[in-house]
Amino acid sequence: MDPNIFLERVRKELEKYAPIPDDEWEKTDRTAFTPVRYEKGEHFLRIGDVPDKMGFIWSGLFRIFCITEQGDERIMAFRGENRFLSAFSPFLESQPSWYGIQALEPSILLCFDLQQYQRLMAGHPCWCQISRKYVENLFIEKERRERDFLTENAETRYLNFLREYPGLEDRAPQYQIASYLGITPVALSRIRKALRKKNQIS
Image: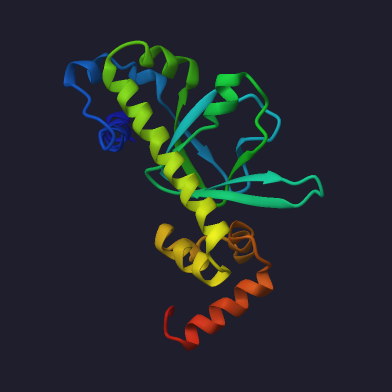
């Protein structure tokens, strides 16, 4: 596939955070963006690795997860098409990541070296604006998720999940959706059954 097709889609998503001048975009090293195919179950980042790259999801689906002291997996987030993947805080701290990122289906990422990303940040102000807005959105997402756990019941959390991740319930395993919601698969099955009776889901 023509690399420019990949890059124009990346630019379109980046410019949701801040405009990128044409001359600045032309300075971008196009060869630094590498399309990489991930098979189902393959890791973009393993727990314990120090991250060195970020990715843009051209196609596919990923889960971000951690493991408790008891050895149980907990789903922190899902990421699908046109979203960015990174473990930026472990990278900035040069620390092993305490969470992993794994493909849930065959996927294509456009990968970019985090060291090169930092060099971009030192250049035109648009990159700092993009980074700031992106981090702000992640913070809002994190705060909304914390609010749901603190103030909402499991049924409301599930309805919020359906709004936040439309179509994902048919792509991700139910036990992983239950993990994301902080409930058991049995409890999720009961919630879905109750909502169908109320005609709130199909």
